[in-house]
Image (tube, rainbow, N blue to C red):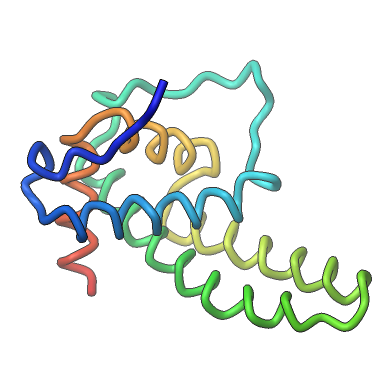
Length: 134
């Protein structure tokens, strides 16, 4: 199955939709190894997320993106494997804290991320919140 970003359904330009999707994907990929919840953990359905949850997700995602921009170059310049691992650990701790500071659990953050990929309305709402927070 091939996934695409349908910008017309989101009501935003294709470049903007792709940019949002890429930013969310990058944030999730960097976080996913440490944010993974047990397989038995239940994810909420997209309709279970309130406007407040989606706004909190948007704010957390912006913080996570900023942390990615801060840490990725530093991690890339690590001189040893130990230094690299220590930087990754610190980056992940800061990202977890950023998500929690917005009032979300890691499970909620991951669930909203999944919902945004599956539901154009959720993605659009997150984009609106991101725009208002910038």
